Image 1 (tube, rainbow, N blue to C red):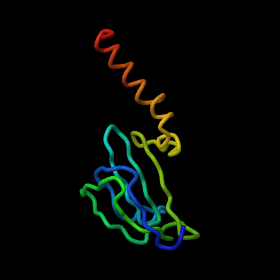
Image 2: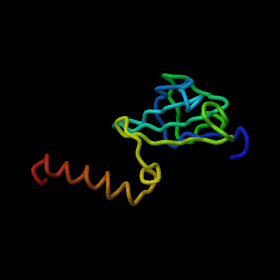
Image 3: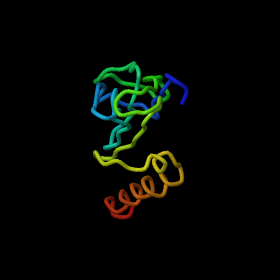
Image 4: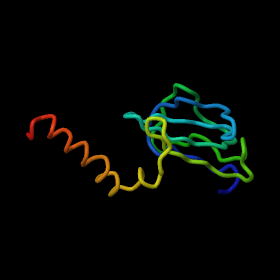
Length: 115
């Protein structure tokens, strides 16, 4: 990235962590519900504090070199129930439909007795 580039929230949610976090440096974690979290690390600045609500696309921080970072960048992660997963999947509409939405819809049908 360019130095101190804006970091925008991938989706709205509650900031559940905003502070220094070991090798991640200045780190923000946003909870989106249903066990889904996004992680933004190595920031120079952070615009939100723990407990605040952010909206999708909000400028939440700027990239940086805090923690174990050899150059200015953003370390972006997606966690499900605390387990790191591949962010590419969770940002792909087709994968989300097949791997999340369709499964939830089929589960509802089973619970409702096929209705």
